[in-house]
Amino acid sequence: MSTAIIGAGIAGLQCAAVLAAADRSVVLFEASSGPGGRCGSHSTPFGAFDLGTQPFRATSPAFQGQVQRWRNRSAVGRYHGRVGTIDAGVWRPQADGGPDLYSALPRSSLLGRLLAQGHELRTQRRIVAVERAGNGLRLRSEGGDEGVFERVVVAVPTPQAGALVGLSPALTRAVGRVVFEPVWAAWLRTPGPVVATLDAAEVRGGPLGFVRRRSAAPDRPSDGGWVAQATPEWSAQHLDAGEATVAEALGRALTAVLPDRPAFTDRGAHLWRHGRVRQAIGSKFVADDALGLSLCGDGCLGARLEHAWLSGRALGHHLLEG
Ligand SMILES: Cc1cc2nc3c(=O)[nH]c(=O)nc-3n(C[C@H](O)[C@H](O)[C@H](O)COP(=O)(O)OP(=O)(O)OC[C@H]3O[C@@H](n4cnc5c(N)ncnc54)[C@H](O)[C@@H]3O)c2cc1C
Image (cartoon, rainbow, N blue to C red; front, side, top):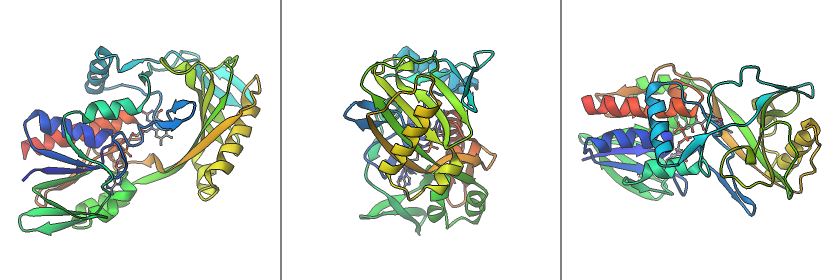
């Protein structure tokens, strides 16, 4: 029997990488059509827009090592955009240049694809139940029985994990402590290059939380593409607003805060219903070793891609010790 990992985001994929490197048999189950999760890219007629992670930080030696390995494969480059804040319409660049930032090349979804290489990944398999089956655990998807596994790792956004960890009181309690916030993210585009004095900004006041110019990252199209993320509060108030309405509203808000007031001609939006972690569990992972069921992901450790990767890695090493 092998280990099943539910969720092929960066946490689940890194957990799989650690187990597979020790010759353990792993099967990944992913609800969507490909790996990467919130480190994903959105295809449009005007190329891909990274509507989730982008750019990202690497502060721990372990993740810095992973970033270096990606850089050696030309899968990641340094992000040199001008980052700052827009407060009451006034742009202020970060005084010290801020932390080192990195960007996947040429789009965020590549990282998931690289990490998934060599693993058995079953896509379009939404797991709906984890049940006891003799000494193992049986997975059920919307399509039926997916088999019995010695151990099961739940690596889905933590609010969605509740239905999968019900066999374990410890995991159920841990999941209950986590708070996630929704994020509406819009892609917006003008056909020509934009004369921009800024590349990425935290916006204070109004519907926008964070905005960034697509072409500030390496290997992106040079047209006037932007991504605008709404604040969690605005996103929560507009959960049912519809993609077209949200894209229109965030486009208007972005035009209003950018110094050159670009007129966006093309737009779209995506809702990350469980987008960002506001309150994490505070430990790298949670494991019910007696049951063979465990939990990893950014909801365990923090709100960033690095936290997800560290969480999956730590759980992988823990499972090797067991
Ligand atoms: C808008 C936005 C912007 C962000 N910006 C940044 C940033 O700039 N820098 C940064 O460091 N981080 C950023 N993040 C955070 C970062 O994307 C996440 O921390 C990280 O990607 C989480 O990885 P994960 O593996 O824990 O979860 P996920 O990426 O959510 O992966 C979980 C996977 O599980 C799958 N799944 C869910 N339910 C099931 C099921 N029942 N069965 C099977 N599969 C299932 C999902 O489809 C998904 O692929 C951002 C996130 C968002 C939403």
